Length: 277
Picture 1 (cartoon, rainbow, N blue to C red):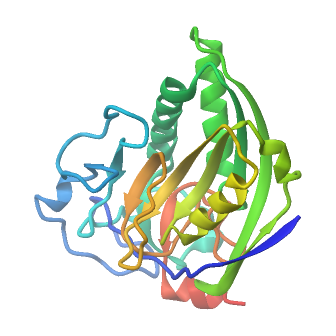
Picture 2 (cartoon, rainbow, N blue to C red):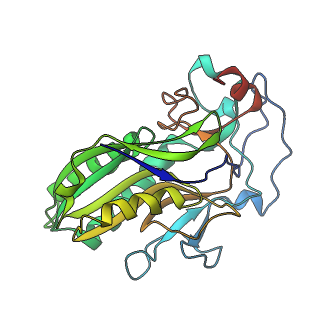
């Protein structure tokens, strides 16, 4: 199946976390974070609410609190982590360490089970960047189901959205793969995505799925970028809200590179040029 949808996407920028005064090879030394910067991740209502409260669930599905990474957040120094040697000199800093991603994903699974547990769920994973997040999220959901009185039966299908070349949009999006979407009729659908930018891509996908009249559609996205051109779309479940930078790692790629990087990092200009196609 192949559906072509119009969309506009651009590249991205991101905050950074407190780091030690260690300069990795090929990187610049950044100034020490201020006291406010060192405060770290800030809780924020996904609907655009207050900063400064701890992340956690709020009443009602779709009105959760996400981990909001502020624009002035300095990145974790690369030398504090292990990462593939073939990417030395290609990264600016670590935005979100792998362990934090895993813990946040587990929390999202608990929120999802609280909202739609005891239902049969069709998980629709958006490839390729979403496969790692989806696999971890589904595993957490299974663990919760095994160890609680809530049972959820899940089936997983995969689609691919192709839009980026280098760090720029190609101007249109193509939906590739997956079973016949008509099989989603009457189903409870959970779409799992890696990144929501302007929101146009996801709204186009939702429009295509809604034609087949599923019983329910929920969207879980690992990342949401703050973009001036955003149409305001918010997923039901958000891992982290980040500034508008191009990020790689944890299966997020740049021209198919960096998927083997565990941490979510910011690629530098040298890396973009090195892997440009």
